[in-house]
Length: 504
Image (cartoon, rainbow, N blue to C red; front, side, top):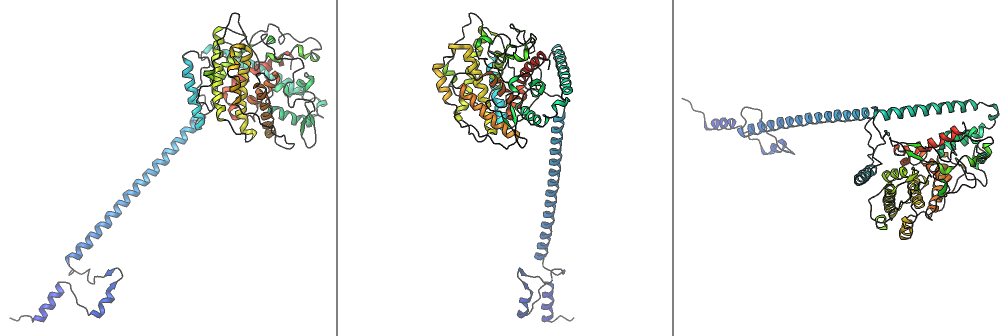
């Protein structure tokens, strides 16, 4: 039996162990930068350690690929879900905006007693919504939701619309008079600015202006389609009062606007019948006998019933700290309802005192923070709010008299309002909106300076300023809110009454 030589046995053993000895000179050629490269890794003769290492590497690679596939899958699902959710929200929001009607959130302006605190809390919530920019304008709804009241309101609206349509048809038919063609070039600019001021429609037409002798030279044409106020005349007046009209209280109670069962204003019969009796022949030359601007609901003053003694105003209530950033519709609506009455009883007089205290406290806190007069566009919102507040406070002084105790708080109160600014300069060439903003700011500053003395401006100025705030498309956005719709209706009713009186 032949046995292999020792040299052959050693060579076979080395082959089985997978080791090959190379000369030292050739070992460096099989070493890479990342480490040694196994020479016979794919042969069955490789070591067990190398086989296990390669198997572990393959398992880790497959596990990593599996984890990445799961991550990508969930990411894709999340993106699809987010897109579907965003699309659903947008679609729901759009359908909500397009839906007819809607739930209207509106305060009850006639609440008294313990409901005042709850209403004030709701007002503060509304103010916070406005500050955060999440409030939305809502169309007003009738205060009375009974079917009979709705039907009566609808009939009244249709009747007013028919009357307005007939009047408009008559005015349009008159506008084709050949004698008026020559002046149409300058009337177009005048009418555009009168609309910017918020004047009622019948005051903008030439046939209506003929009834007011002081309005014939409001605006005189100049070059380049510009208009300028005529000398010695108050600029851009919607309705010019005749000399002799004063702000005394004696002529205030002849005709007034009161609230009916639905809470909407309506005109009561006048005791003096100055607006109900048709004008006699030659009435256009004696307008002062038939048109009393003091009867306008914007400047109306009620009187106290006999034996009514209002309680005294408390200065401590006025100068308390109130969280107020904007004007309060609650106090203003209460005051509007009270001043629309012809007479005030004891309870209404006490409510008037309390509402004036709350209104003064709110605006005193607002005035403590002040405002920066940057431009008329931004200043008019604050100046307009000051104007409405001072108008009610000073008119309450005329109604309540000594019960206001002005000597105890008036000086400190008015000192908080910084209104000693120079007027905004007027520019010759500017847009209608810019000219309106400057005109409104200057007139508001002038009216506020009069109010701080405890007196009221001329009634025609007060009416014109409120029309500019509530009717003009260029007024601050806060005064375009549906909350002021009752103010607009009051002026419309008064304007329609004058239109029917003169058959415009």
